[in-house]
Length: 488
Image (tube, rainbow, N blue to C red; front, side):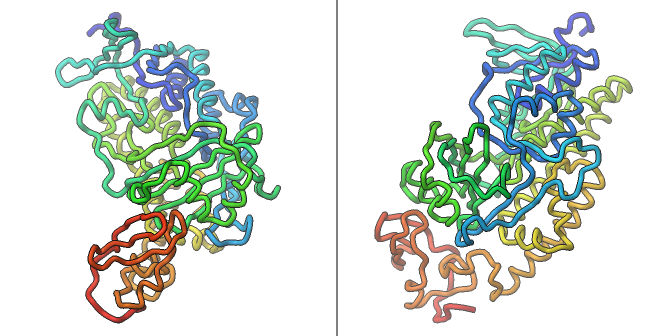
């Protein structure tokens, strides 16, 4: 196809942070960028706290002053607390304790994503990118094995083929390109369920934690909750658990959410006078991986290339840095004519970075207490802070993260090899801990129902735990040989 017949140099599928950032960078450099967004902004999206590293890309986009002008909450750090900790007693991470080179702000932000995403898309338009909203990309167009454009639909029966030198997928968890090419696969290690909403009347934490993202652990190995301050004294509050834990309850979304709130002392206090002002948002089965990030005529950026879990606020970090590196890769490919070489380098760089995010998240879910242990050890605190600052795509960042993760993995193996170690998962649960066997005394040690607090009984003939109050049924965990030992 001749250059004159192209509708754009680059077609970008999706107008979220990734697509808007790439469109801005290309347009500012004089290239024709066409962003095709299926929704009309603003669109509903969960409130989100950002990593400090995103300041670097916002600054590169000429967008950072707009973030401040919008009045988004300034976030200086993150903190978390255990279920029975004293009120407002947190482990604190001040994210700018160790300055990031070139970072122009001593804070990051907590944002309403519908507002920020709309601002970013408008900024792309103002920078020279062409933006189409309410337009749905139906299919990729090929010449041989090369992607050469897309078929776009404005309304039923009205479609048009659009051609470009390159198509970039920024469609988020829709994963348009990976889905069409059969490259997307559900992550077998994660099966989360998330419920969240916005609230007024939440109890404000002590002044020391103004702007902090606060996290409440729930006494569940794969459960946690968040409290993010937004503008106008509104808070985003959410709960993440293993999907099977929610399915076993048989509870409504509201009953389940408040049941989780009651599992943490400070969370309960913070929510005592809270009033929900938005509908419940529900998400599940959202973790996946993609086999390839690039190919002839196409690239993936943002959530379109991978998504795991929101615990470390990695989503916008991946979106912005993948857009920046995709921009640099596109220019290199056009300059050298060596597209595959440039694309392979891009894929290796992004894969290494998102694998670090993945490894951190997986390690957190294996043993939540490890995060607290390393964050409170002076020799490791800087490693934790640096890891949570984001941008794990630089060699020095990767080297530091590798040292931290290797040490945490070693600690995990030591914990799991010692049956008496109190940091083991389910140490205080005689059913789910692998160190315990059954006898007639085991039932007296059962913890209360995680949903309603009722008494739990062991039904030996059914190999189930059953709550006598709400009827919650759950398996007893790994099979164990008969025996009298209660503790190892």
